[in-house]
Length: 385
Ligand SMILES: *Cc1c(COP(=O)(O)O)cnc(C)c1O
Image (tube, rainbow, N blue to C red; front, side, top):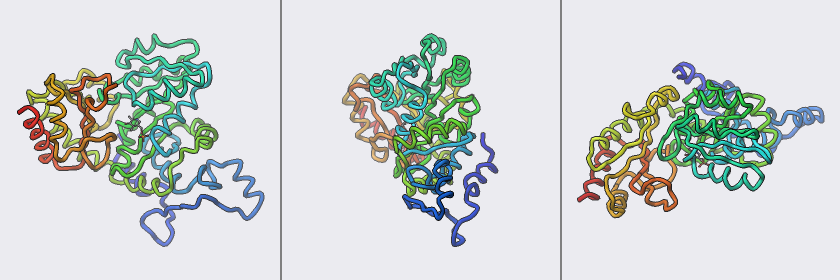
């Protein structure tokens, strides 16, 4: 766990030593272009486009400030930010594969990650095997002589099933594979993936990092050499960059991340408890619940809990599930999560979903706990009346 002193240093001092006009917040450098007064200076910059501002598809000072803070938070040597989490994941995955390679990916990853591997990259001769990530033996049994990448998302989207990241990363490295982990659920305050040696730690910064549902962004953290290679190839060629304005918003958002998480987690615990004791709820999937079968793994992997879980209504009626969702007054029906507003993502809206229609994901935002509990209980009363 990152110490409070370290957090203060990273969020309030790192990279902010020299602010013009005695300002207390960093400036936004919107310039797309940067000029040089000598040929030798320009020539030198072209040799090191990652570190010197030439053109904002490469190095932009505001974006770079955000990246330095994110790398420090995740305990990695370096980081790159992207225009979306999916852009970050696509770049990191592409760094690890070429035509003829094989990927092992755990089941129930984020839907667009699945599409990237299963659909887009298969067109370029990359084959993917999907395995049950709870079962480390099954993951290992999927290895072929041409397997170059293990893709993890611990816990997975919707059902929140964990993988043994530590064991599987060590195993993958012993067989010459790279490991990419989607760490969005852990937020950038979780440092453990780097401690396990995960090569590329990806995040959708749209979620906890932004925290206000007003920025779409992605992060890749890793060691200096890998991040430099990623910059020189996928980052520059795909051009999936973040704007300086959005980078500035994320720098601002980071300053309150720990406080926001604490509030949501405290509220989430009460909402989970409220649903667990309600006979109209058949199942609650929250990996931080003491009764969860993978609680030991959750405690090992996460310094803090995360305020999102799924639950299953005890009914065989689609009308009851629909009525529950539509009876909520405060909690909204929407994709995404990690913002100020509490949201449900009901599986009944997704005909292709592998999960039962009674399953609903709930993200707990910043509203007060009594309002949220009353909202959920009121909707249960309406739906089951
Ligand atoms: C939202 C999400 C993504 C994709 O991030 P975008 O910023 O929407 O591109 C990837 N992984 C997980 C787990 C997510 O929830």
